[in-house]
Amino acid sequence: MRKLLTLTAALTTLSATASAATTLQYWLWDSGQQPAYQQCAANFTKKNPDITVKITQKGWGDYWTGLTTGFVSGTAPDVFTNHLAYFPEFASNDQLLDINSYIARDKVSTTAYYPGLAQLWTRSGKRYGLPKDFDTVAIFYNADLVAKAGLKPADLANLTWNPRDGGTWQRTIARLTVDRNGKNGLSPDFDRRRVNQYGYMTGYGAGFNGQTEWAFYTATTGWKHNNGPFGTKYNYDDPRFAQTIQWLADLNLKRGLIPSFQEVQASGGDSLFRAGKAVMVTNGSWMISDYTSKLPFKVGIAPLPKGPDGTRKSMFNGLADSIWAGSKNKDAAWQWVKYLASAECQNAVGRTGVVLPAIPSATNLAVAAHKARGINSTAFVNQAKAKGGTFLFPITDNAAQVNDIMTSAMQRVFLGQAQAADVLKEANTKVNALFK
Image 1 (cartoon, helix red, strand yellow):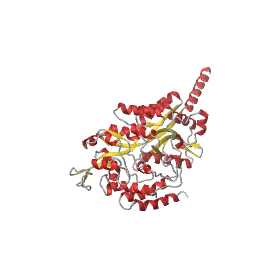
Image 2: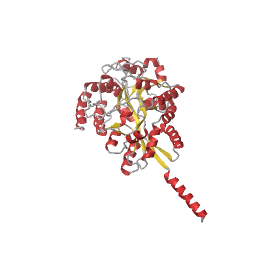
Image 3: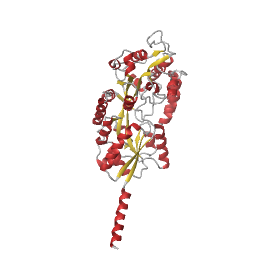
Image 4: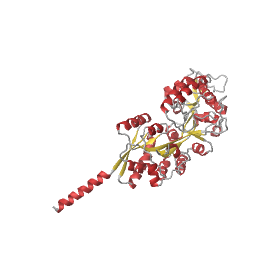
């Protein structure tokens, strides 16, 4: 009888231990980051043996579809990587947990990150995430083709741009654009209808934010998307915006120096750059590892061209980890989010160089990791550190509707079906009507 009681007690203890164990579901969309966060999860579980983390990676489209479906069906992950384009809608629908009480209880500092990043994830006194990384924009170039054109990296380091004639940036694009007869875009004999190699490609950014396509131009004219975070008045009817968008469209429509909107859509994203058919592309710091490790040519990185105000300006976007309001493991989820935002995890991620972490010391580790591979990624970090060198992602309500309106109008400009000055005013009226 004594043995039976002892066995029963042991089984009861085992059962209690098992029920106390928690498995958190954590989602991210970037497959390149998964190994780094897998390491963070392993380190986290060593410190919290009653909590394990199951990481799921989904492609961009499936990721957001899966999340929104999961919110409704009750199957969303406990913790997920969040984006500023989606955060306002999730917060408005009470799908995110306000973590202010946890931060206060555990005395977690929100000042360890690059200035402004932590503030991005607040609204009406509530906080919906802690920063994990940031991104800025720079020029990636095919170093082999740049050298073949007789240019040096230093020639790309001090380019200028304006919306009237495109400055030295446009002339450099023209020099690197070559037709089938071997004439470049500076030659009077250049055949813009038979281009063999483009000097530059853009994804066009026919949408509302233009992070890697046009926002770094428009910002240097003094233009702003709207009147601040969660703004209710947009400025797409501003002549400075229209002039810039028309300049970008005309690089193809009138000059043949960049691939057409249709060609970019048909080839898919940055395929022409990857195929060596376009020499330069502007893109975000999240592409450093991908471009420099997977392409069959050497890739260099140059800072953005300086605009009319004499400065370079990049959109400053930051990601965060958020907790689903419907999670049944909120306390464990908070422990994981707190760890993800810690120097220990961000240093581990930084050492891989896969992203630029939100904590400056961890960013330095990422830059060092790039340097060890012969890559100079300082253009991205210098942009973030430069006084006035960044502007915030246009965090907004009605993001999907704003994007739909602007996509329709911008595509007409890029297709040559309308002039920017004509259609963008009407689009702006529609956008601002969403907030009345």
